[in-house]
Image (tube, rainbow, N blue to C red; front, top):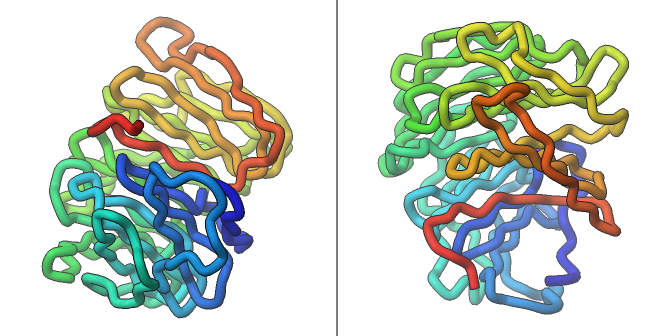
Length: 301
């Protein structure tokens, strides 16, 4: 695909998500639009290609439902989260009416994540430093979660959805119970003041990315019972872009992707010291603007 004009807003999101049917990109345009393109479409994307006219202000993140390849959620600076139904063959016209609009945050909605094992459950983080757990089927906020004194940078569920992990501008990493919203464990993350991110591995450990005090990028593997003390930590480079970790739960492979980078590093995470094993680096000729990780429910031809 070519001629896709990815948004240029300065926000630490990858602006892309993909599933076995569709690729979605947050694109340039007035308000908060995003494109949805069938994965089998090749070639140039026409400037008049239909899109999702999603929000009144910039769209910050999009995420496909893990249960329905036609359902995608978007969140925005306009304080709303919206859920959209995409036809099987893709869009034939621009759409602006969501299946449901979720209104509960007082400020912009920074990020979102679908529950991996409970259908229609969506977690969102707002600029007022609160989390909301939604039932998308009814539009009801099931749980409001406080406890973060500053901006929430990232959220992510564990393998069975019983817990989720957050990173925050106060540099703390928190593991929270998905049913109660209570903090199960917390500890200090990376020392740098720039955004950091955290994800669970399948066995319940944490992979985090962030910066040192000297603004060097790094990753760490952490035990969930002792978050503040990394099992292993490695400094990588001095690039400015936030590192986004992607983890393959079936193979144990970890991919580190930085927006603006020309490289993707990948590793194997296992139980053998030093626990994170470098494999290789994939390089590109152009800087990366967006990235997504496709699930394995179906193969893509």
